[in-house]
Image 1 (cartoon, one colour):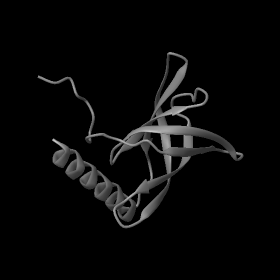
Image 2 (cartoon, helix red, strand yellow):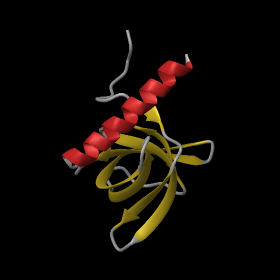
Image 3 (cartoon, one colour):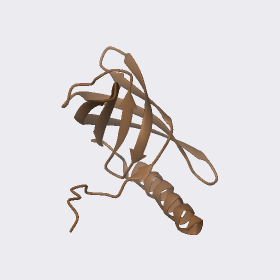
Length: 116
């Protein structure tokens, strides 16, 4: 039996992500995985849990690159081997944005299935 507590499956995404705080403070980060409900990334510094942020992330789709621009909240932050792993829940996705994420996840699932 799995101890999995996630609401949605996660898929790897190695993309640079721009995180913005109030007063236009920016932090570069690298995406680790993405789901319909949020993402995990490595940030250049620790971000306190419950911090509200703005995220910009380019999602590569088969026929286009979609730029996700949405609000989120940090749900966890832990340091592992000197890197800051930051879990973020999306808080204001539009249906159109959710559909683009679903499209990306379907493409990743199909690519992983055909690689087996």
